Image (tube, rainbow, N blue to C red; front, side):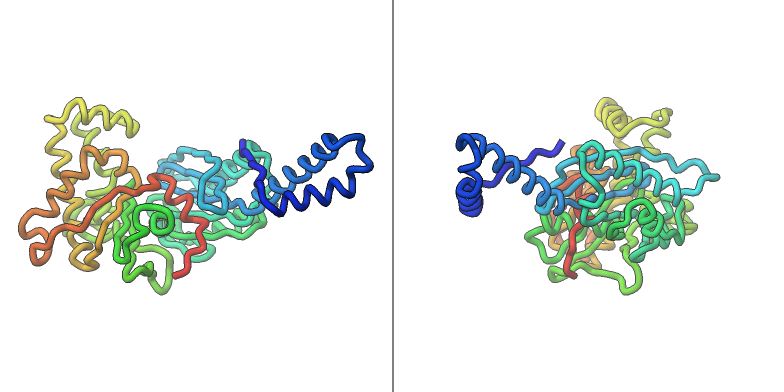
Length: 355
């Protein structure tokens, strides 16, 4: 439940004085007048704070997170839902809409807020989007779907639709670890791989659609078939899905959670070392290409990768600094994990970023 604090200010002191002068004679004592005034002040500030609230939705390949966000970019309430994209006969677009509606309804009811009090719904999608449509989201099995109009049938308020990696990058730039960097690369490594680039302090944006499809950069000729229909895409080798699938195949297990996989790795490092090394090799190839092209001051990584950073991050930095891996034998830029962690996409989806 949201908690509201009355703000002590000269304005309130003045308003209280005026209120007591008008109503004090009609009350038996000052205490009763104070209570009536306090109730009005509390109601006013409750209403004022709620009116600044926005709802951010971060859609992943297997998970949806939603947050109620105040005007300072803080998540004050949060709901989550796991999704399964294995049923090929299902209309994934409409099911995604139902999941989002369910989560929004749940958070509004829990916080006792009406949708009319929300100024904006922001939605972060892992794929290519326009202002209204999911153009193509391979890991969601959705193509050319007008998600904004469908959600507006339930909640008729403004909706902002953006690429998820771009949303997370904007949040990290505004509130997180990228605030002090003009040239930076941000990657979301989860079910797939997405990214965003800042050059001279400005977000690099394609002319036509939202999205910077780093995950579909080819790193292996005639490699593994990707959901996009091409072979050898970066995310088929360096996403968290690829990493987890390889771990489960080697250990002969299935359907483990991230916590279970991490524990399995920590207890069997000798057996898992070759899988970790192969994963780092593949991730390094893609990152080296991006470093050689954009020359960022720093690289920030979000998504499921953050959960495994203790096992992976140092090895990644070491690999990138090996001789002849980067152009002119340059030292790899600083590599950090997202300060806002998995909340970055939720927060960034509602930021009005000036590009």
